[in-house]
Length: 360
View (cartoon, rainbow, N blue to C red):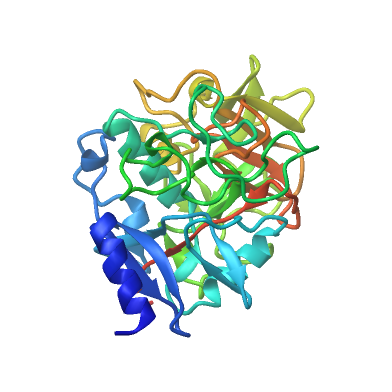
């Protein structure tokens, strides 16, 4: 029996619902299967429409495979493996490339996929924790994970080895779950950006298919009609009429069709206080919630420890999610949208996902 076969057998003995998927060079990654769900099944209203994360190239897919662990990079390819120091100091484009290099259907985790996990966790009454305080979560005094790199000044661990935290660091509180969605390293997310404060996305989960470019000049980027939630071609300057924009009102992110901010630039607030202006219709609100960019009514995401950041002045800003090891202000619902796609530092990594692609 091949070593990979033995590894798969051992994995199934401990984590029976996990899978080992192989890229086009036969190298393994440990993945968690998320079956197709509707808005209603994710606790987002009564709609029986399929959640956008499960629609690629206009066709529904039966499941998404999410990396169980934050990724490392070997030979230019992304891998999900336990007990590793997650790759950091990587740009958005490099993270996208490391995922797509693995073959068709491999991609950097998207905003709709992250939003699906937030919705699933909220419906099941649990928000995962993780390393947001130099090796531990700020709320847990007795739990720590194994350090994976040199301690800071000989005193603190920075990154922790993937999957070595307690069960509270898994999205479903079991070893079968997805690890480290909160903290350790921020995770670049695909299919979303802002342009001068205008939020732009790709259609449904088309960001899962590398044939749909996420480059800065790609024509795939669409703005969101605030009244209807339909996607429209942006004007390129962030001033598309009637589209969703990120305004700063009363010290919180407020989605609106105009930016009234007297001092546009970098801003931050808690996820729980993000709100909608009167110009944002129900369909657009639901889309923003599905993207994990706004809380649903009755959200159980804590009112502190989930700080979110955005910039409504720069030409393009990309997003990463989940926080990192060095601030208790970071949590599972945190997003950071004040960095250019070229940004890279020791607190920013990524996570790959896989979908068996339908025909374009």
